[in-house]
Amino acid sequence: MIPATTPSNFVRDTIVDDLKTNRYSGHVQTRFPPEPNGYLHIGHAKAIYLDFGLADEFGGKTNLRFDDTNPEKEEQEYVDAIKADVRWLGYDWDGLYYASDYFGQLYEWAVQLIKDGKAFVCDLSAEEIRRYRGTLTEPGKESPYRNRSVAENLDLFARMKAGDFRDGARTLRAKIDMASPNLNMRDPVMYRILHATHHRTGDDWCIYPMYDYAHGQSDSIEKVTHSMCTLEFEDHRPLYDWFCENLGIHHPRQLEFDRLNITYTLLSKRKLLTLVQNGMVRGWDDPRMPTLSGFRRRGYTPEAIRAFCASVGVSKTNGIIELGLLEHHLREDLNKRSLRAMAVLKPLKVVIDNYPEEQSEEMEAVNNPEDASAGTRKVPFSRVLYIEQDDFREYPPK
Image 1 (cartoon, one colour):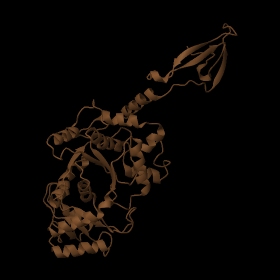
Image 2 (cartoon, one colour; image 1 turned 135 degrees about the horizontal axis):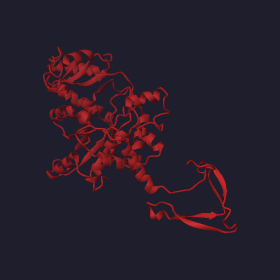
Image 3 (tube, helix red, strand yellow; image 1 turned 180 degrees about the vertical axis):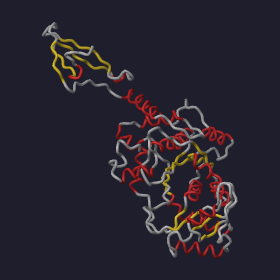
Image 4 (tube, one colour; image 1 turned 45 degrees about the horizontal axis):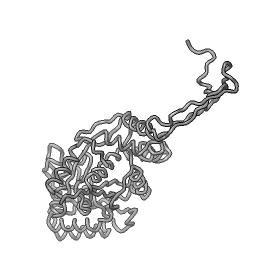
C-alpha cells in the first residue's frame, strides 16, 4: 500500500478526481501487463509499485496480464519468473490473464472494423509501409490497397487467419489518417502474419495482433479504469482512444509516467538477454544483473525496493536516479532488521599480563541499535583475548 505520507502526484490526483466525479462508478481497476520475453528488472519495480499500490490505496483491484502477442520471443520460463518476482515484491494479483485469452474477441473486433470501413488488408511489405508513412514534416501516402471493398477485405482477412499466406505477405491496417501529425495514426498495422508456435495457444493462430491494437482492447475487456504506461506511450494514446471509441467499448483512461532509469545500470531487456545468451553472466538471476531476481540474490529486500520506488516519485519528465539512493534504502532497511554478531575470522591470541589470571567479566552489547526488541548479548572479557590479525601491528604506522 502507498503510505499515507507519500506526496501526491498527477497519476494519483487523476484517480482522486475520477472518484470524485464518479467517472468509473467509484471503481479503480489497474493492471500490470509485462511481456514474457525476459525477467523483470529494477525498472519494472516502479510500475508494479504504482499499479498495485494505487489500486490498494483506493480499495481497487489489480490484474496481472501477460502481453503474449509475440510468440517468437516469449516462453513459459519468463511467465513463471515474473509471477515469482511480483509476489516477492509483496504483491498479489486479483486476476491472472493473458492477451492470448482474448485472441478470439480481438479477431471479431477487427472484423467489425473492416465491416465499418475502418480497417483494410494491405499487401505492402514492412519496408514499403515505412516509406509510405512519411516523416514528421511530410504527410504519408495512402496504400494502393486502402480502398479495397469490405467483401474483399473480409475474404482476405479470413484467409490470413486460415494460413493461406506466407509470413509478412499481408497485414491488416486501421484506416485513419495518413496526413495526421502523429505518425502512430497513419494507418497503423493491427495484425501481421506469423507462422510461429505460441507458448499457450500452440498453432491455433498464424496471425497475431500488434501491441497497440491488443493493449487497449485487453484493458477494456478487463474493465480497467486507469491504464498506466511509461512516457514513450504518450504518442500512442490517441490510437488507444481511437480503437476504444470506434469499437464502442469500455474506454479506460491511459496515463503516462516517467521510466525508472538508474545510474550505471543497464535496463534494456534485449541487451540483458544478450548477456545471458552469450554466457557473460550465469543466468537472469546472476547477482550482477539488474533483474529483481538478481537483486534478490544480492541480498536486497523487497521492503527496500518498495521504499526506493516511493522515494523517487512520479513525473512527466524522464530523468536518472542515483544508484546510491537505492543503496541508501537497502542500508536503512537492513539496519532495522539485521541482528549484530561479532566474530574473529583470523584470530590472534593476546595475553594481558597485568590482568588477574582467574578474573573475567562481561559486557552487555545491544543486538540491534534500531530494534529494542532484538535484546542484548553478553560479551566476555578476560586475561586471554583473541583479536583479528589485521588489527595488530608490532610496529604501528606513525
